[in-house]
Amino acid sequence: MEYNPNYFTENFSDKFQKLLDSRYSSIKQKKRRGQFEKDFNNKFSDDPCGLCTSSINQWFSPSLKRVPTFDKLLRICSLLDCDIDYFLTEQDVFQKDARSASDYLGLSYDTVERISNYEDKIKGLIDVLVFDNHNNHSNEDMKNADLFLDLLDSIHEYAVNYSTSSIKYKTASGIEHEITDKKQIDTLLRNNPIRECGTILNTAYVEYSETRHYNEWLYMNDMIINLSKKGENEDELRKKFHVPKQYNHSIPTHF
Image 1 (cartoon, rainbow, N blue to C red):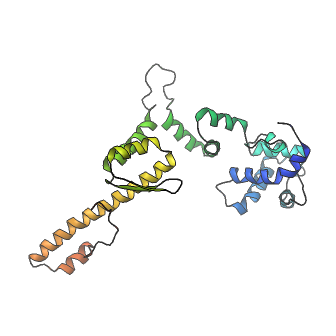
Image 2 (cartoon, helix red, strand yellow; image 1 turned 30 degrees about the horizontal axis):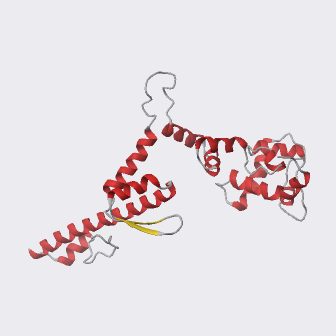
């Protein structure tokens, strides 16, 4: 990609806003510029000019077409961990390394970017889940190397074996499906994108919860009816055990 001075001037505002939104995603949008100004001045306290709110605000005014000086641009990139080519060329990613990681890992660029912004302790947890390198200098099998796969397998087995016998869900495109066969559910979970699987698993959990609550209500309701037949006050028993006469939650269709 070739450097074009006009490109930098015309696109700096939009690109800088995207960068701030990514790097300060945990902060409310209206406070991101202020936090950037604070971080910049703290890190580069040797800069006699520093940054002020008015200067930053000018960068976001398209009509003014104001851009930072080259030395400040370098410092912005250093602070926000960004390739300078992102601003000077049509490069659409903050870091080329992130794009390389995306291609290598088979993850979306947005996912790699999000992971890169996690706290170190979260990154460490992901590292342990995916690949425990505790024994990476020995010939022994790494005891937790497959922990992440085991975890996903457990979630999958739970969904297949303990979910209700009917799953209704919507695909990412909004099409509604209902599946009642366990083998179909198994195939569905193995072959669909994780976002759709998450929808399916959530639906399974909701239906399982409703099933469990309904079974509990049936048990308690039968107990109260039996006790009332022996002379105890049914209304008092329902009040004591918090069991209404009618179960008002929606019950899965297979009941």
